[in-house]
Amino acid sequence: MRDRALRSLPVPAIVGVQEKTPDRPNTAKESKEIDKDTVEYWEPSVANKSIPKAPVRWLIKTKSDGVNCALADDANVWCGTGNGTVYQLSHDGAFRDVQRVSSAVRTFAVERGRVFVGCIGGTVEQLTLNGPSIIWKTPGGNELRGLALFQQTLVVHSVPNRITVLNQSGRVLWEREVRGYASLMVQCDEDAIYVADFDETNGTPVTAHSSKTGDPLWSVPGVWAQAGTLMGAFLVVGTVAGEVVALNKSNGARVWARKTAQQVISCATGGNAVFAGDLDRLYAWGEHGEELWQMVLPASAEPTHICRHGDHLYVASATGSLACVNLNPVAIEDARNGRAPRARVIKAPASTG
Image 1: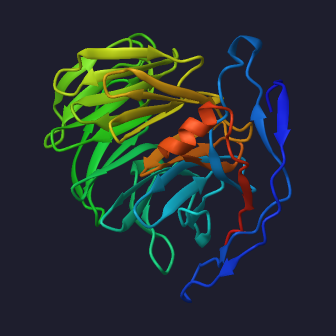
Image 2: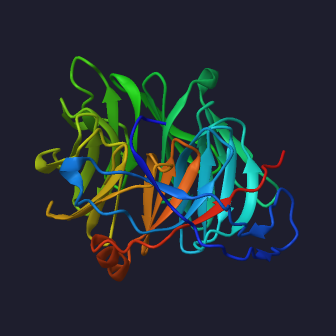
């Protein structure tokens, strides 16, 4: 834990609830077991005492060294850990399933109820009721750095510098070597695949490739991007230099850029807003770059990845937790006025397999 001043907020005692899900293999009972620990927040520096605490509804504590990513749809939330455990939860934090994949989870993709896991060890796996099923492996078991999904097509970015496009059965449609070294950012839509190619000489350029052929469409050097998300006509990237930058998807032109206090670890969009997480706080801007708010995160929620669904922002953490931040306008306004709620702390069940 970094050497920062912490302040503890007590968590109210809440009676545990357990609900049964239909019998199936590799399943955990839904559980809302509440830890009696406290939720600690990073204390803002003297110069930033006005920064409010984020309205965290609940916080999952796992036994893993890190939760690497999170994903949500209308019914479920998934988070994946550094030890290869995938937890499936409700939006209220109730555990529904636990599965083990072949290696540490890098990222998720979901479409029409089908959930795919990109594993650092080079596999793409689909979650099923009978457990995960490997549908594809990188050549030579090379590290998988990114996974994206659009219109039933999976896009894999793997080490050292390969883009592979698959159908959902794992058949390779096309693949292409690209310049630089695969970074953690890959996004796709019907027009293009957008990647950040780690290249110290050119400052980790962001490059767009045709989604049909892989041919380069445009490239912007000097971005130092390590996270990205799509919003309308924009590709929004977070950088090592502590910026969130909106690029025009059609040509890579910079539309707007906003500074953050530290390097941007992850970003997400939703509801005409852009969200970003650095090492200890969250930021929100409107689609034209107007600042909406910034808030301090719990100390145990240093973000590795964030995702938005409805009124919830899910923050995966390098410290092994998943936090659910309430984005309801009333909750945000209360938090800005110093009335952030006391978060529930929920223990993750033991993994299976």
